[in-house]
Amino acid sequence: MTSEITLFVNPTAGRGRGARAAQPAASALRDAGFSVRTVLGEDADDALRRAREAVAGGTGALVAVGGDGMMALALQAVAGTRTPLGVVAVGTGNDFARALGLPIRDPAAAGRLAAEALKGSLVREIDLGRVGDRWFGSVLASGFDSRVNDRGNRMRWVGGRFKYDLAILAELAAFRPIAYRMSLDGGPVQEIAATLIAVGNGSTYGGGMRICADAVMDDGLFDVTVVGDCSRTTLLKVFPKVYKGTHLGHPVVTVHRVSSIALEAVGVTAYADGEPLGALPLTATCVRGAVRVLGAGSATVN
Image (cartoon, rainbow, N blue to C red; front, side, top):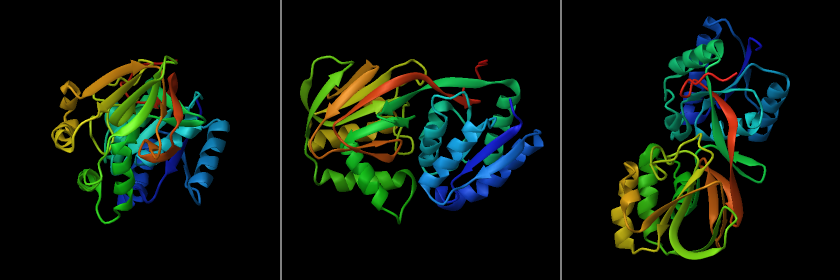
C-alpha cells in the first residue's frame, strides 16, 4: 500500500463545512505518517476526472470530504477497484456515513479512523447499486419521495432534515398515486398503483429517514420499500413513521429483497444518493462487494 492518500474535497458541502473539514482530516492522516494530496476540481466532472486519475495512479485511498453528493461522486471513482474509500461526512444528510456507523461532522475523528483502518487493513467490502454506468450507495428514490427531493433541492433558504419536512408538506397538496410497472429479479411485470418505490442498498435518505430501515449493505440484496396506493390522510399517518422505521409494519407498506429491479412510470424522476438520476424507466442491480470502505465495521480484508 502506498503512503500517499488522496483527499477528495467538496469545499461547499454543508454550507462551507467541507473546506473547514479538509484541514483536520488531512492533519490526522499526516500525523499518522501518510502523505496527503488534495483534489478539488473546477466542477463535478473535473473533480471526478481527477479522482479517477488518482485511483488509476495507485493512490493508497480516496478520502472523500463532504456530504452524500460528494460520497456519490467518489463512488464513481472507486467502485469496482481495490482502492479503499475513506468517508469524512460533513454535509447536510450524511446518510451514507450514517448507515455505516462512521463519524458525522467530526472530521478529525473521521481522519483518524481512516488512518487507523489503513494501517490495520481494516476495511469493509459493501454492496453498491448500479443503474447503467452510475453507482449508488444508499437509496434510489422514485415517486412521492423523489418529488419531495426535487422540491427540497430548490429550497436554498433552509437546510437539514427540516427542509425535507417542509417539502413533504408542499408535495402533499399535489399528491396522486403513481401507476408503476415493476419487475423483481427479472420476473413478471407487475402493474401497481403506489405512492413511492424506494430501492435501498443503505437504510436511510433525506438526513436519517429510515425508508429501508432493515437494509444491510453487504448482503448482496436491495430492500425495496413499496408504499402502496393510499389516501392523503393515510400518507400523513405513515410518512412520519419513516424517521424511526416503524412504517414498515403498516398494511400499506410492503418490502421485497431482490438483487435487481426494473421500474417504469410516466413523469417520475429517480434520485440516487440524493442526486438526480434521470427519468424512469430504469433497471437497478445490486453489485456485491463493489467498494471497500475504511473503518466501516472494521472487518479485516486482504
